[in-house]
Image 1 (cartoon, rainbow, N blue to C red):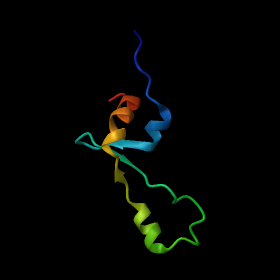
Image 2: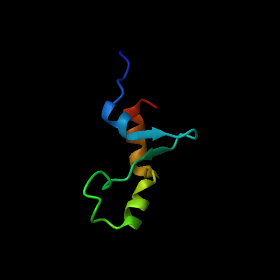
Image 3: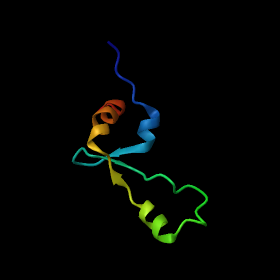
Image 4: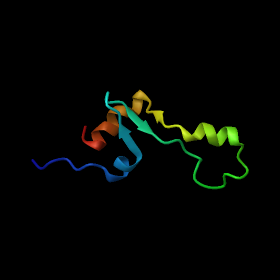
Length: 64
């Protein structure tokens, strides 16, 4: 049976930490930032840990 291919879209969006947790970027910080408050854009800077419900599926897509 051939190897599973990595889902390239998922590979660009998610990063695995050293402990195996997955990190993702927050949405709503690409454009039209002028009218968004700076407190909001600052908060959107941070990467967040993925919710456990999605973790197994994303790990499978990444081949981990």
